[in-house]
Length: 227
Image (cartoon, rainbow, N blue to C red; front, side, top):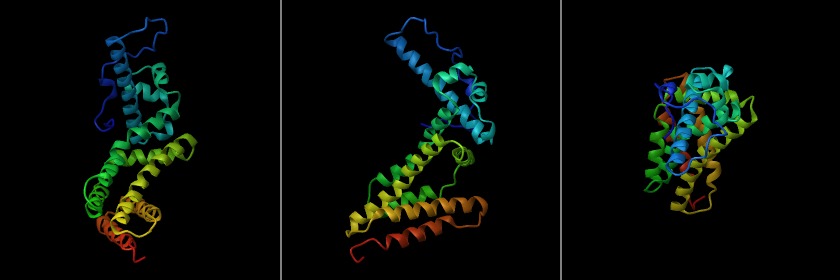
């Protein structure tokens, strides 16, 4: 489950803040499991703090030192878990996947034919995005303009997101037959979804549900042996 940024205080979770002691004896069994759990907890706290800073409009002043301070973890421990600032940002990119990509993947892969899957997809797409997630996406896009590793990571996530729509049209093609290539249809619909989201953030009068349903039905009508 993804770390929630809203209402989260990373510093409230108990954890050691000292950097690891290389001379300490190696742990085994339950001791190793406890150490591993503590490390995962520290990593999650750092990612939660990073999300808070980014969602708060601090992308321009985003540093590992600020993240460490917010999470109550030492700067050295932060660099034990993340090699650098970009490494932490890329971790945030992966951390938000369960909040926007995974539900879409589940909707497309779920039971039923094309109609049932399309309805689940449209329901998800017309559900309001949380303000924190919207700000996170905006911050990550800004960071991607100046950091190639962030750009590559974000591009891979969007590729995964777009592939859901391709799979949706492939399911329709499997039902109707024919040799229609689902890739252009899925990519076209993905581009429209992105555009409608941008327009909706500026103009609340746009009926995104109606627009997306109309477009999906129009694209679906091109699939079949009669083409």
